[in-house]
Amino acid sequence: MSKVLSSLRYSAEHEWIDAASPAKVGITQVAADALGDVVYVDLPEVGDTVTAGETCGEVESTKSVSDLYSPVTGTIVEVNQEAADNPAILNEDPYGNGWLFTVEVTEEGPLLSAVDYASANGGNVE
Image (cartoon, rainbow, N blue to C red; front, side):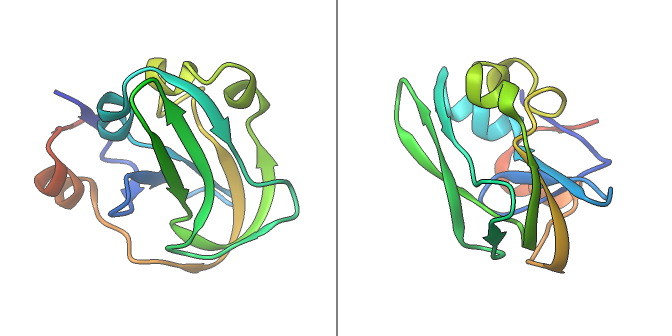
């Protein structure tokens, strides 16, 4: 069963966000497991403004293409070039080296606790 980290908060669209500033964003293990082998990631660029609940990129797997949604509103500070160059890292380590971007948050969208996310989507809270 997919891991859901208690230290993070989650969007209904399967993105996670940490409490740092700037905040780090990635996709959940639930999403990575459902997608299968990730083969391509399209990320926003540094300096782009993202809006909570709106698309800001794509994650493509051998099964499908899924939109990437921003869990918050703010400005992109950094993108994970390693994830862009080696998308399989999203399957291998979605909460660690598979992070996608950092954002200077100006407003949060609706976020779920780990327990609420796991309850709605399956997964073990750790």
